[in-house]
Each structure stands twice: as structure tokens, then as C-alpha cells.
Length: 594
Image 1 (cartoon, rainbow, N blue to C red):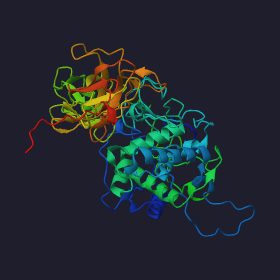
Image 2 (tube, helix red, strand yellow):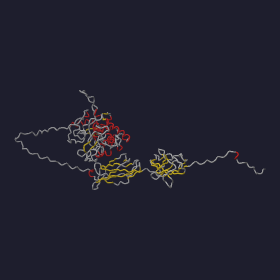
Image 3 (cartoon, helix red, strand yellow):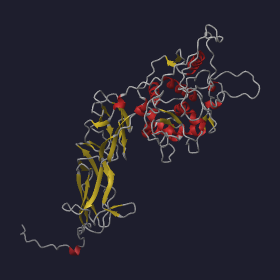
Image 4 (cartoon, one colour):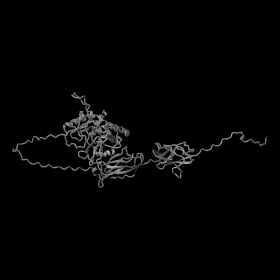
């Protein structure tokens, strides 16, 4: 099989009894609770959760994948001549750089989304069925594939119909989308799921570090816990919505969990079986025998034989009929496909969303609503709308994701999940687009404002004293509240002002010190802690005596003034004298004696 996926495979429907028996045997031995139907297709006996993710909103667009199953743990082989091979050694091994990318992605997801419990073996399983571990590890030192890995164009002819969304930037196709890279992302999904996994400042679907990290985040969305089997199944099905795909990935996941080994880059073997190949499964896959699969040679059709009932007759015999020209073949026009709801969308309209403002850390009170309409203005239901948070912001939708896809209801309206403001203030944009159709997006402006407090109170004295040139013994500490409750992470500005009537920064009197020891009379960037408390740095005094004001303010209008006095200490009162000569003399009594 060629390294690139972009050739169109044969569509002939040829399925033999041998294929059915082989696939059934392999399926039963490797996939959990898997059997095979009469045509050799894998089915499940249990009610495995399925995904409702349409092709255009999945990771791969439900593109074709490799169907080879892990090698069997067979008993010792019979004696053979020559050097025996280790069954499955190249199939079971993972190229070094590719393996490193999977493990680094797992480490990053453990930090960023610890509740997801993503195992690197799941990334390896998906990488195996999507691209044969980047075509056997054909990557450069930075993890970028040597040559692009491109899937078939998704033109609706045997595949999903996904019209171009990236102007051919990633897949080189300006008409339809193709899955791209070692993890086979379609461009419309990569646009929001892409990540920079190797720290080079780019998000490249052809880089195994970027693609592995993106796949990890994709599988960990919706607060799925991948240690739970139901969530694991949902996540895999959302990557490619096929029960056969689920079973194949789970088989490789179990195989890699039992142990694997590192092999040099570029030495891995490429799988042979493909989900879109009607001949796949006609015989046990090479991955089961340890053979190096290589490329499949095109088959040559055997000459057709005339049916036994149509034996040739001798010329001139009575049964011989004069030859007649065959009727020219008629071309049956291809039926016109029925337009899907998505095909009828002409534009998006704001469904009444206004005033998207929230305080930092709060949930926006209003949700974004978008209406899908035809050219005539009629509502279009059952259309997927993607909402994407854009701009320099840490705001997200509920669950911590910056992208959400919602299906329009019968009124053509899709309501995005609630927006949650981060700590970063300012304006940003949420863009609504139609999944699977190129129509202009609809932008919504949102703003995150600072946290506020309506009251500031001093937890210490409201008047501090200091001698000229000295430092104040006490530090100012305040508490911020909003409607009587603690106001945490509220910005407080402290300014030493000239007077209550002239609240500009003073140029003399008390001051703070910066990191270089220079005088500073305005402090910004200070925030209250989780208890609403803030302690300011020490205050110092210059040689100017007087009474000064330290004014503290917050967003929301809270104000508190602290009085600062700079004065020389008062002269102590003289102590009483103990010299007898200075004592008042006794006066003779003038009282008459008895």
C-alpha cells in the first residue's frame, strides 16, 4: 500500500467466504465482546455507547483507517530453516520519536486536565490505526513527517461530504477537505483543536508532537474520564464514528497496555488493511504473521470465460444467427443528491444576544444564540453550529474548552454553552460558523471587567505616625467586601494624595519604596487575597513634617482614607527638682497657740 492515502481505492464490492471467516476469527480473538456478521463486519454484543458526532465535526471526518489488528501471542513456531523472525516485532514496536510524542502529550494532559486520565497507549492506538505510527516513524528530528500524510478527499463519493474549509492550506485541496497528518485531523477540526506540542510556536498537523497533544485535548473535552469505559468509548467514537473503528482502537490499546518497545525512527512497518478497501480481510493480515507488509501490488483481472451455455457454433450451421451490432451503452445519469439541511444554510443571524459582559471569574449571565437561515430567511434545523472563542483572553465555555458545537433546534436556533470569564480583562470575540459549509461566520463581542468591591475597611489603626526621615511602625491592611461578602482578587490602588480637596499624587511626605529603593507614592497591581485582605508594603517618611492622606480605591467605588502624621516627638516635661536649696522655705505659723 502506498505511503500516501490520497489515491482513490477500488470500489468493487468483492467479499468472499474466506474473508468472512478470517475477519470473524480475528475479531473474536482480539476485540472485546466483538463478533462478525455474515459479511465479515465486526459487531458488538453489548450496548456500547455510540457517538452522535457527524463527520464534519469529528477529528477525522470519519475518514478511512487501517484495520490491521495486533499480532497474536502464538506458541513457539515450528522449526524452520534459516533465521526465524520474531512475530509481530515491527508491528508491535513504536518508533522512538513518535513514542516520545505520545508520552509527552500524556504528561501535559495529566497537568492540564488531570480528571481525564488519558493514557499514552490510547494515543498510540489511534496513531496506529490512523497512520501506522506516522508511516513507521518517518519523521525528522523535530517530529515533522517526511512528506505529508493526506487522506482521501471527502467529496461524498464513498466518504463523508466536507467541502473545503482551509483554502487548501493543510491538505492542498481547495474544493474538499482531506484528513491530514499522523493523527489525521481534518482542517476544520484542526482549526480549533490544534496545539503546539514541541514549543516551536507553530501548530502543525504534520508534526507528531503537535498532533498527539491536539488528539489528547480532543479526547479529553466534555470532562470525559477515560478511565471510565463508557467515556472512553464515547471519546474514541467522537474521533471516528464507527463501531469497527472503536473495536480496532480498543484492541491496539489493550495490546500496548500489555507492553511494547521502542524501535528506531523509520523502521516501523505500514499496515495493509484499510476500512475503505473491499479486499481488506480476504486473508489474515500480515501483522498477524510477522511479515513485513510492504506495498500491495495492484491486482490483474483474469480473462473472462464464456458461460458454458454459450458454446460457439460452426459458421453456416442452421443455428448460426447473423451477427448484429450491439446496442450502444447508455449512460444512466447519476441521481441528484438530496440537499442536506446544512446545504440549505445561506447565512447566520443573531438570535437576540446582546450585552455580553461579566466580571472576571464570573459566568456570563447571557448565552450566545445563533439562528441558521436559508436565503429566504427560513429557519434551518438539525445543523451543527460551531462556537469558537477568539482573541487574547482566558475566557472559555463551561468545561474549560474554547470550542463548542451545538445542533440547531426546529426553530433553527443553536444556543452555546455558558461563557465563563477568566481573570484577564478586556474584550474578545466568539465566532459562530456552520460545520460543513463555508458561509460567513457571525461574531459576538464580549467583555470581561475587573472584579469590584463596594466597601474597604481598615483592619488596623486609621491613623499612623512617624518621625521625619523614619519609617512607620505599622503597615496598612484593609479588607474588601461586595454587598457584605468577601471580595477576593479585587485590584486596590493606593495613592498618597496632597489633600482631600486636591486628590492628586503628592510630591513630598510619606512614600513607599520600589525594588530599587526609590520613592513611590502610588501603588497599583495589588489584589486582595481569598479572604478579601490586602497588606501594603512599609511606609517611609521624608524630612517634611505634616499631616498626610493615603487614599485606597477599588473598581466598584470603594474608598478608604488613612491619616499619616509626620512630626518630631514632643518635648518631655521637666522632672521635679530634688535640690534642698531650691525647696520653698518654711514660714512661721501665725496661728495662736492654745
